[in-house]
Image 1 (cartoon, rainbow, N blue to C red):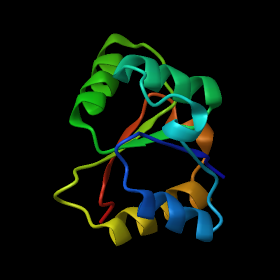
Image 2: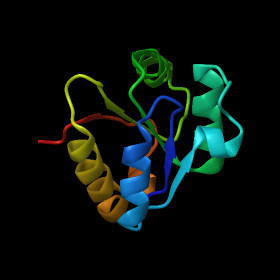
Image 3: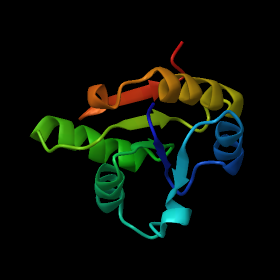
Image 4: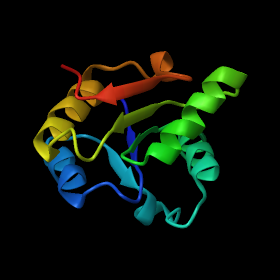
Length: 115
């Protein structure tokens, strides 16, 4: 099972519903990482071994830069706030968390919705 790390801008309804469905979720706020820069937040997610879910395009840019430079990170899931509903995020993140293999997420960026 994959554990998720939620960026500070993720709607709390997504986190709450994932927890109701049994997904292991930690928010940046709960971790004390609320004020970290995007590069440091991605480092923190990697330290924790948790895939980072974000709706912040700047964090997506950081992940792509790391992919291109070969700098290791644990993985990022990105959803544009205006293109994906809360329900779609919850459904897709639950599927990823319950069916995914953490080893396959190293240096990976995935976009929601999955369909």
